[in-house]
Length: 563
Ligand code: ARG
Image 1: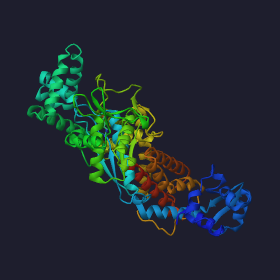
Image 2: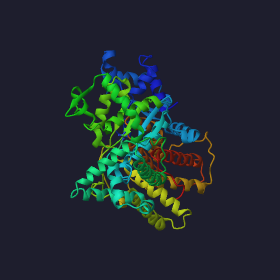
Image 3: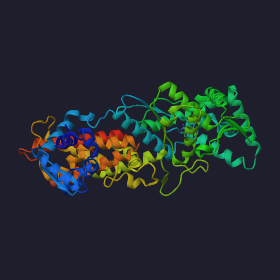
Image 4: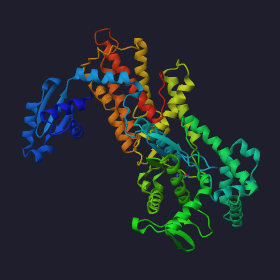
């Protein structure tokens, strides 16, 4: 039984069942400071139904509660505060971690329901930007956290692989491109052609007409246009895959925008049937005034369909294909309006499941104070960021632990992990600046700091040469261990908060706190002394290692055993 249930049972009994155990659990709070107690019950919430002064309810409860299970129970104003028996608390917590191992903290909130996650979704023939990095790592962490809480996540990469830009790209390639060049360095070359197109079309507006003609041909299935498009797509995807492999992130589907080419007619005809389409300056729109939104532009005057039309087709397809219980879109905050419109149009179409569509927006990343953009050509390549961070990690390993085996692999796990962790420790909506030196530091609120704390725990365990723990001997009453034990016990609560608010930063902050508690414990206590407390101390160290590793795994970050 966990501590909250023990406390709630005692209260429920003392109240003669006026509140059930579950009802009490929901009311329990954490006192502001730990000298007030470990768990508090707000007795004033009963004042109305019991027609009694809150302070009196609290003191009466204290008299009725069976005190033996607790170190102390006392009334503080309208609260009943519980002090847990530290030894017993330690034994319960450590036993649970050591028996469940990587399954510790697991919940079943989702009952196996499918959750589609639209994530990463970069645009073909352009580099993956730092902005796409956010979508990729936030989406991946959410997928891990959803799986941990009993959902079945489905990761969908909605590639930007269709649109008028492909007309420009084909035209540019026909004028300046070479097959060998593209093969050697696809993304950079394609981007170069694209940027050059945008420079030259200012003086040669006829280029735009030619580009439009190529896109028209592409939409009509012209052989050459299709071949070039397919080639650009597969070369781009190959280089995206390199980055995904480096990040250790995989997808369940790469159905991008082009996948919906033959699925938009249905959308348009449903809209027509429901008489939702209106003409506006030659274009077809859905009026969304009652949602306080601008009209959604479904079809342009030249008949070309739009981004939102594809998203409507995609949403319907996903509902049919996966029968999701939630459908998430991890896309930057600049698209908030787009997703509001998407949801509103789906509601207008009569799909009740529109309520289960959730846009998970996030803020902008700047690199050393600079915004990132593609048109101007000033882009930060994610590949470069990852290789720079790996180099910085290597430099620190050389300094701290030059004899380490598998240095290159560890440096990669630390460097890449640092970039992912930095992204996730910030609340998603916060914009933040990215300074690599700080991101890869081994001290401070960084990924390497957490990895290092866990590697230290592993090194203690190696020194002790201990893999089996006596679960009947886990009483640990050292006050220095208290914060660490309490943090360990709060893992599933953190996971639950993270999943309900779609906020991986809660797990990142949890991991930083646990690492910090553990470092304090370790600085204060000699773990490896051969006395009667050794088994329990090492069990604590092992538990910290398990929970830090699992926290990092949820975030998509590796945990090297040594660094
Ligand atoms: N390719 C788009 C971009 O880079 C993101 C697509 C997001 N997903 C979606 N279903 N609209 O801005």
